[in-house]
Length: 172
Image 1 (cartoon, rainbow, N blue to C red):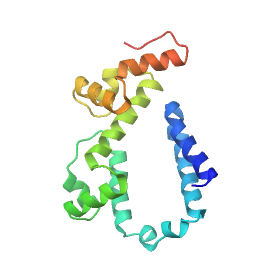
Image 2 (image 1 turned 135 degrees about the vertical axis):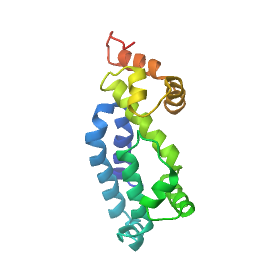
Image 3 (image 1 turned 30 degrees about the horizontal axis):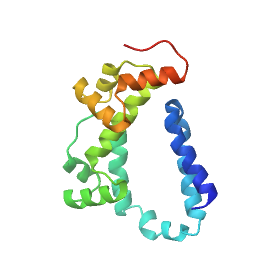
């Protein structure tokens, strides 16, 4: 890893501390990370033919990921995603996990929880509304999964954020 790549990755991770900046800044930093990878000594491996061919398996999985990003709040069936990717269910599942290091359901959950945290911290939405907005039907299930993912329950996360930013106003 080069110092420039390391710096880019650190800046990407630090965005987690400023949720309102993520939607604007993260794509720019991600693009920089890719650039640094491509011009690095391993760049030739990353530009392998299968990564740039329009109908490659990576591109097929990318179509499913794009659908999940646009529809993360909706329930889905894995066989529908496999159809979007033009793959069999088992092939899709294998390649999705190889690319994302998680199952489609885990990926959806992560998208939901990250958006819920943004709604809570940046938009100051209350916990029940944020959970419902991102697709959770049960507030208690949302709070449990949020706590597992972020290490603190949503109400405590709100309180910590308010404390960090010197605010005395806490959402109910």
